[in-house]
Length: 168
Image (cartoon, rainbow, N blue to C red):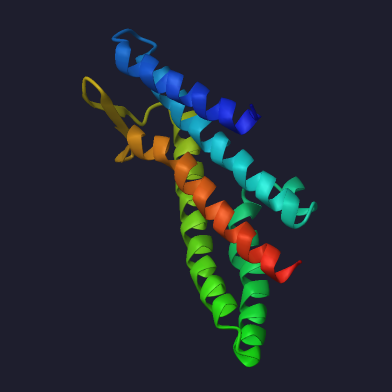
């Protein structure tokens, strides 16, 4: 099992521990769950970058959204023009879809990293325990953070599939 899968399982364990606790550590478990969910998706994106360009996987967290909407999207725009010129309708469709995937993945990364920073460095910002099985941080429910893994996996798969069509 890869570390990114482990990270998600650890996050889920922390999520459940926060929900099942009523003591002074509840807040810390809740914050740690957001942190681990973020790192799970970070590792997934880093693995994708590693397969696309090994240098990208060595970049700091803050560079990830820029790589997606910068170099990767620029490459796709260029390849889209070529595909349109060559009449490759399937590749045009795939690149167009993947450009949306890139934007969505960027949004997830930015949002997740922002919540990680709040969870780690702003302990005075409260975790809102909504009811017995839900809580949120900055109005982002933990169930949304839990869903980042599945969304990120699908988006990375889409990006890699289109990338592999370009770089056969």
